[in-house]
Structure formats: C-alpha cells, structure tokens
Length: 142
Image 1: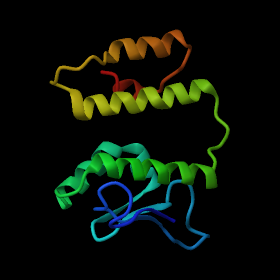
Image 2 (image 1 turned 180 degrees about the horizontal axis):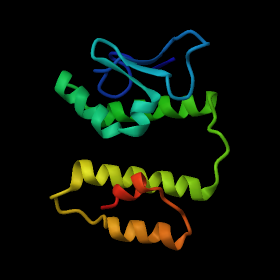
Image 3 (image 1 turned 90 degrees about the vertical axis):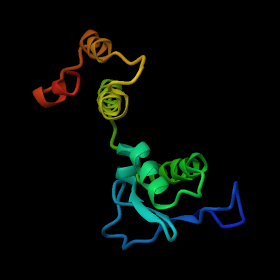
Image 4 (image 1 turned 90 degrees about the horizontal axis):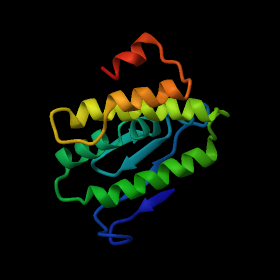
C-alpha cells in the first residue's frame, strides 16, 4: 500500500509504502515502512522512536519535509494496527508503557533543555495509580 507518491499528496517529495514481506515473517513489529531510495523502518522502530527515525531521514535526505513524512508513517502504523491488533491490555499497562516511553524520550531529547516534564511527578503518578515498576524500569526515572 502506498502512502505518498512523487507529485502526489503534500510536497510530492516522498514515495512511501508498506513493503511486502512473506506472510510467515511479517507481524505487528516487523512490518516495513519503505521510504523509497532513502531508508526503511520496521513498525516497531517507528513506534519506539519516531523522532529518531525522522532524524535519520533528515541526515540521509535533507530536502524532504519530515513533518509530512511523519504523517505517512503514522498512517502506516494505523494500518499495521488494523491488520495486527494489539493483544488485549489493561489501562494500567498502557499508562505504564506510555510513561516509560515518555521517560526515555525525556532522557534522550530533553535533558539539559528547558522542559516541563517532571520525571519525579511522572513516577509519582504511577505510584498513585498503583502501577509497579521493576528495577530496570525505575532507573528510567532517575
């Protein structure tokens, strides 16, 4: 499936599509988003570090608008989620997962910068919600 074609939507700079794989190897994490002539990312890479993926594209191809490209990547992820639904998870599991992603993002991109994210308050919110963290997860909030 194509998300953008040269001369098509937006700037027409990108030709992006869901790269076909053998049905026995593709899943929710391994589905491939192909940015033709630039690079590819798995759905997991995009979900785990969209900012890092867009930074890589900017390094490889400085002419394209990654804000536009991010839209196409999000459409791809929505299609992957439709084809390969997540396992049923609780609201607490989703809160924990998102808090951990936010903590990782903060450490990677915001540390030393003026930022309104408080890792202490985020961790406190998890405690108040009764969400347990293992030692490795706790270190992400230090």
